[in-house]
Length: 152
Image: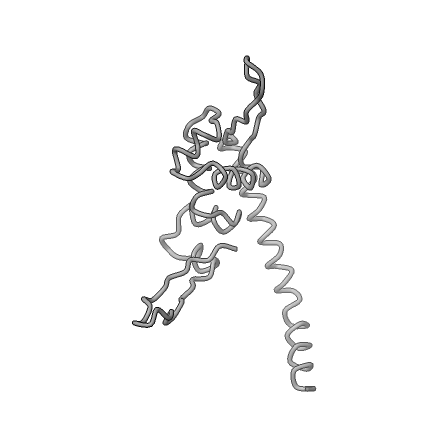
């Protein structure tokens, strides 16, 4: 899961004084949470990956790795890894195209908004089901955990 880390400045010896972290669940349950927060939480997206999703959806046509890397101001290998994750998650399409002079290249496109919405709703439902299952087991599991703790 993606965590938002905030660091407190280093002391004069360069030693990190403290790291604070906001849990993902707090991020999406805030009053001012955004759809970006939801996507980061549900899909475990980095800011770069999220930028690529929105660029591809907004663009509405396929783009090459080179175009996307330039657009996000990252080297091609970094953009490629982010795009592969998006393809694996099913929120980005990758198509192999042939060049007239020989060879090929990959073109990336975003999935349509309705498909993205349906996939997101599916993930939310899976998460709800997991929470309900955990709550049903809560009493039994907490009793067992307390018993095993006090038997030590």
